Image (cartoon, rainbow, N blue to C red; front, top):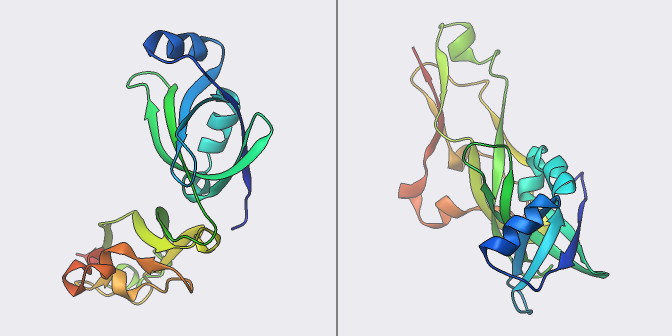
Length: 191
């Protein structure tokens, strides 16, 4: 992992809609930390710090160093509630992670060699993407930034499937763990 993310948080004791609205008016985002050894804890995050990190694709599948009133925890962003009409984050769910316990996480797929793809360059085809991300199962230290999908050898009518991907060591596809019939197509070259 290239980037390391840190969020500063403050414990909050008040709860409910009114308390959350008051919190948002002061530039804070209500959030909850759950899982692991500890109890679920209500916190508030600085909205500007969270929004800055949310602009980076890798943040969604990275381990975050969360500082809660001086104590540090390792967490993963699990859910984010956004306002339906305005660019406002309403709530965040963070899950504690343990360095020796495997977790499921969704990572982005990065398609490479699209312009040089055999089916596109020589046959005039077009790449149709069926998946943009992949759920993987691994230790927190093994979470990849992204998974590369090389489409250079695809011809018209051919597809690349999950089983064709070269996943890093220690990383396995959740779909493939369910059996061969879950080997979904990621991209196809169509005419």
